[in-house]
View (cartoon, rainbow, N blue to C red):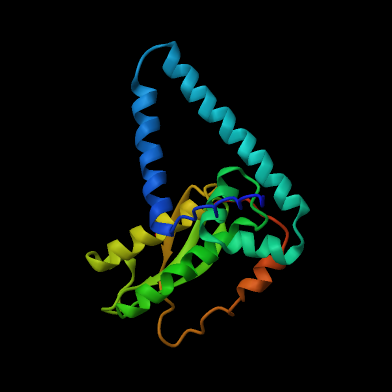
Length: 198
């Protein structure tokens, strides 16, 4: 008699992962607000399990070759887990720049643009131009874009304390030299933060 094959694991679509993460947040918030030793034990069990998973993820990363580490770092779900467990292989500048680049197509589709400028201490600096040609300080759509950029950058690089909009270069002044994302990736890790320029 032939052995039955194990059922294929059920994979989750990105939307299903996001829904589960939101539900976990809700459940943990509810648990943490409830009194009693059983609840404290449940919260501690979740914390310990999370630590063990973080260690397992770090070990997988140690055993992965460079191309596999790159694919792991660029996968949105794995990137968040690597950041959560403080084992992400990329420096803060690379993660912040990647977060901005992920938003760029949507911002450009609305007639604007967004560009990573730099990390200065604990602050990321980002150029934001809305469809009307004004920067992040124009209000309305500019505020929405700046808020989305801030949220994305701080999620990718929680070591940063802030994200600041950098004014566009005035006409006639040369723009700073373009620094390819790959060049930032070759630099050593720098976990300093980013702030918004005023």
